[in-house]
Image (cartoon, rainbow, N blue to C red):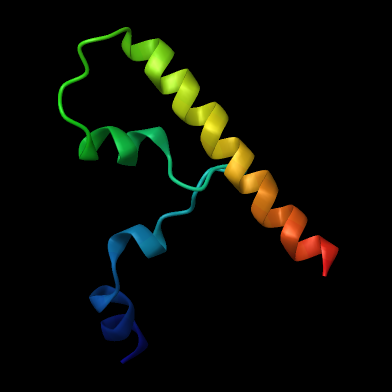
Length: 64
């Protein structure tokens, strides 16, 4: 019975996420149209901004 409940859940909820990441680049790139610029630069900027969001969330949790 418990296995049936787990199988109905969203697959993204079952997959472990990388530490320090809110939305992994692999997921975000699926939402974007074709990138015509330097793909590695776009990936790095996304990962840097995403890491700031992660730190902000943890800071809020630990401050209160």
